[in-house]
Amino acid sequence: MIVKAIAIDIDGTLTHKNRSIDCRAVACLRSLDIPIVLATGNVLCFARAAAKLIGTDGQIIAENGGVISLEYDGTEYYDGDIDACEHAFDALTEHLGTHIQKLDSEYRKTEIALRRNFDALDARQIVGEDIDVVDSGYAIHLKSKDVDKGTGLFRIADLMGIDASDFAAIGDSANDLQLLAAAGFGVAVGNADPALKGAADLVTAAEYGAGVVEAIEYLARWM
Image 1 (cartoon, one colour):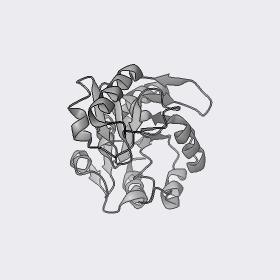
Image 2 (cartoon, helix red, strand yellow):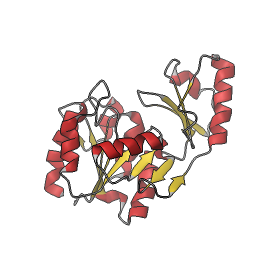
Image 3 (cartoon, one colour):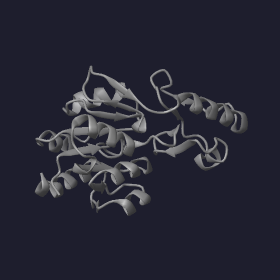
Image 4 (tube, one colour):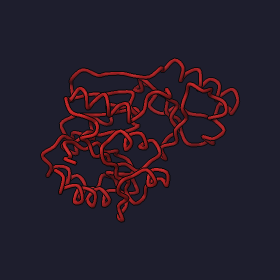
């Protein structure tokens, strides 16, 4: 295959364990002459700030596929039923208690992120079949089941005029499963969720940002 673009998660992938950016991984990405798409469960404003610091051109998949942006100040594309997510949140607070806390609620447009102070397995029994409950390791996300990082990759690839299969994807969490499935080649860094490792074409020996460096060195033969 020829790798024409890379889609990469941020937290747990481009970072150290403490969530600080790994500058070696950033330097690797900056050395490439292909588009770099940041694919995150975080909000768009966070991803845009990260893109500026990392040095990418602003192509972003945010909110687990719910928000797409091709440039820093360009059109934003939205998928996902935030009202259904709000109903699911209300059901959770009714059954599990009011200690359940929203994160970044003023910035999220397509999903709800919650502090990880309850069991996601319990939540899945409550929210109903139309809502997905995803534990990214940093937050628990309530989102539409038909929206994920994979659907986000298909959408942004179409907007960029290339195929999703022309991407290599790199991640660490269960919410990266669909991203790797949509891409032509999937990489799980060494600290990744076991399910993601099982789905990846390559699992790096190194963890976190060091795994990204290893992955880029491996993928260089196809760029």
